[in-house]
Each structure stands twice: as C-alpha cells, then as structure tokens.
Amino acid sequence: MLEIKRKEGESVGSFLHRFTTKIKQSGILLEAKKRRYQRRPLSKRQRRIKALYREMKKKEFEKMRKMGVA
Image 1: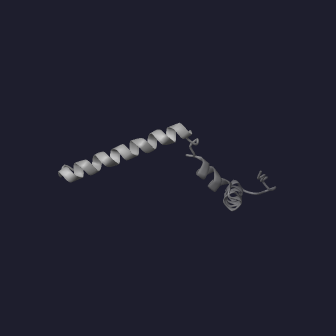
Image 2: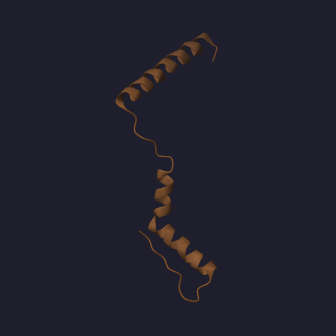
Image 3: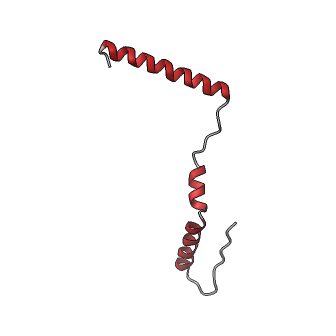
C-alpha cells in the first residue's frame, strides 16, 4: 500500500504532482485499469455452448456466402 503525506509548507499543486508521479511509478493505476473490465471465468458448460454457437454461425455464414447472399 502506498502512503503519501503532505510535507509542511508544500502547496496543493506540488503535492498533487508528487502524488500522481508516485502512483504512476508504483503501477497501482495500471493494475486497476487492467482489473476494471475483468470477467469471471466461464463454466465448462457455458464454454461448450458458446463454441457450438460459434460453429453454427460460421457454417451459416459459409452457406450464405456460397449462395451469394453475404
């Protein structure tokens, strides 16, 4: 955990600048951005259903392409 305290007589602007540089150097911000949209891992059943759906759509698209529709 990162702890930054304001020095005596330090302006708010310089403290904010020092704070942001420390955060960037520590990698906390980068890690938070990575975790922001992280999803839960899918179950084996859900992965199989999605794979079957993808295969079905792929075959459907190929069939339409051969007919000249897509």
